[in-house]
Image 1 (cartoon, rainbow, N blue to C red):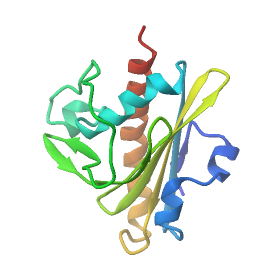
Image 2 (cartoon, rainbow, N blue to C red):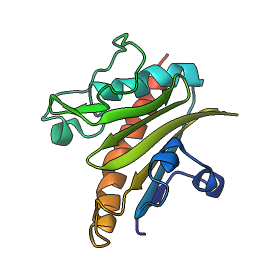
Image 3 (cartoon, helix red, strand yellow):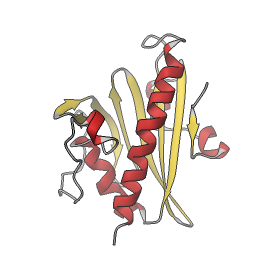
Length: 166
């Protein structure tokens, strides 16, 4: 599929993600990844703040409100909590979490897993999205993938920048 990968290796595409357990036979799969020059413990609190803001293009998906640029001291995410927030609206639900390692949720039918993996440069921040066959037709998948490439890329790069701040 067009635009289904950005910033990931073949090994990262081949591995299992928690979203694979929820949607074992998806109509589409999308992978994103970025290296963060910080240990996972510094990346995790920023990642969990997607519960309060999208961290992508705020002018578009957050109605012009800036995503927080400081840590808010949020409690650890829990299964059943809302997954993200955009434009002041709570969206989706957290399906599973392993503090410091992964956060998986469902939003608009798609299931996505953010995974933190330590590496020699600090942390690989990986995102995989599984799109259920019943949710999107074949013609919509490329459009979803292209739109996600723009938004998820910005989100991951923003989280990277914030986590790397000293």
